Amino acid sequence: MGQFDGKVVYITGIARGQGRNHAIRFAREGASIIGLDIAEKVADHITYRPAGTDDLTETVRLVEEAGGKIIARQGDIRDLAFQQQLVAEGVEQFGGRLDYVVANAGILTWGKVWELSEEQFTDVIDINLVGTWKTLRATIPAMLDAGNGGSIVVISSSAGLKAMPVQASYSASKHGLVGLAQTAAKELGHHKIRVNTVHPYAVDTPMGVEDTSAHDVFANMPWYNAHFVSILDYYPVATLDDISDAVLYLASDSSRAVTGATFQIDMGATKV
Image (tube, rainbow, N blue to C red; front, side, top):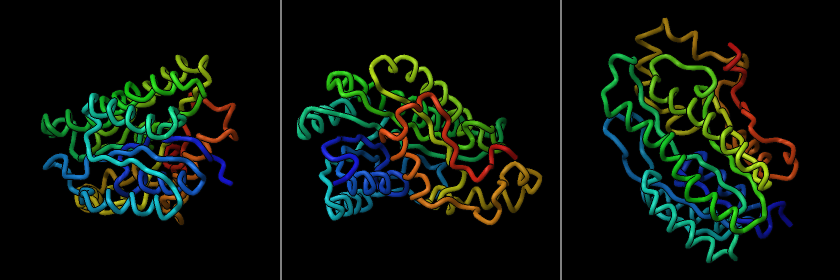
């Protein structure tokens, strides 16, 4: 038996990386998965490899291989109507309930405050912050209707606690997620729904380790490097399971006393 038998979780950005790993881990513990991913290049200013439809198909295969049931759709978190329809479809198929939400989808772009293009700023805010609000707007009514309480985990970043140079739009969006999540925590506590943010530092994903703009910054603007160090220099990059461990803990009854928290999986980077 798994700790999430009979439960249902909604996960954004599910095609690969953290989102895929969260889905597999929940499936192994008995949960049914509702997931989405845009599964295509979002913007020309993104300088890491985007997920594709093949990645989304592979996530479905891996979740089913782990014994889980899944509904996965290609779509954009900026599309509220799409998310509402997906939630309705998933809730109907999986017994009329929605227990957990993992708001994971997001993008990163690089540039100084005064050099970012308008698209670099607004695309990141629209996806990371506004898109996450649309995720909550689409899912919270279903959680309330089900009346089972539950847990919402919003994936922020170490940049949501410690502003980072050359990441103005990303830092602004991830700080915004903290305010959004803590407001939701206060509004939903009475309904037995907990809301927390997770703050990774570097993670072993294409966005985390393959971004060519990041490599350029570290090579050509070394005066910024001090802001990107961590305490655990012997462990520079977190694994996917490091982050999923935190997400599943915050969904589980083991964290029943935790809400409105900023949960750091950052190797101490926010303390440097």
